[in-house]
Length: 359
Image (cartoon, rainbow, N blue to C red; front, side, top):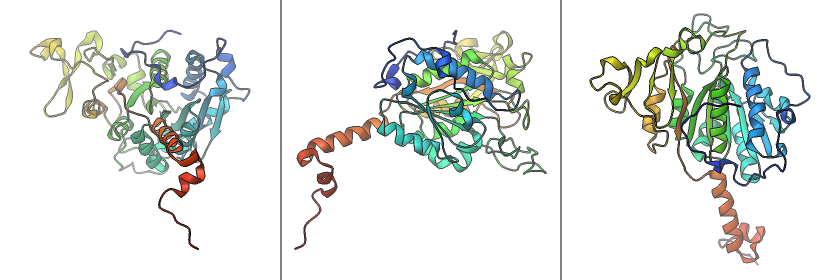
């Protein structure tokens, strides 16, 4: 399967401790016997096909892959994969997956969620998983609408959105999921598109190789309740000027014939400019560095995404930095406690040194 070069080195830390498969895996081994039931034309089909095709590339046993989902159209994902999985409760998938990742270091743990599931009722669980840097991967399908409950506006719907729950137009200011993740100081943050299989696969691979929480926003079209929400970045006539590709180590330049680029604009801000109008030409462009420790740079990149009709948006890996993962540290504490306590018993750990016996 051909992929897009994101400019990131291969760092298989995310799969450390997961048993390798003894024989080559194939896509058919990851396809379940369940009938796939989404609306015709739903972007979820494309993501599922890409994911089923990508999983064998991990080189691990399918029984060492665990999918945890919440509630929503995207959350039917575990049914359609021949791996371990759990269709959990609304918004709580990150919390459940955290427990699984801590208890089972031999698993590659994935969370599949939607913009409503993750950013509304599940917002608190999401941000704490990100800040803790649990070794799991979160795929957030963003269609900017509630699909399963039939078309209410969601936390990512644009201002003025007319829906069944906002007949006069939404007055909410929407979340930018990438900005939110970076604000929580997630160590890996990326964005991709359901219809671009090469790019999607490359981002999935980079996420799998990351040690810690990898957050991937996937623009996903809902043809029934919010069709063409991402038309600008999918239409062949407009996408060159709409997609801002992020490739580590490369100047951020895009548009037909590369006439547009990203430059620094004032304090901690970035802006899109015509390259021909820059005094130094391409030399004035920002060179993308996904490994910048300070999340302010990646956050500034995320703000290039407009909250309206999405006529322009960066696509790729915004941030990929190393930081100790939550589950690794918890397991180390448990091991240290066992070694330091008398006999290494659970009772001695609970009793500790601050208890006494009353005669």
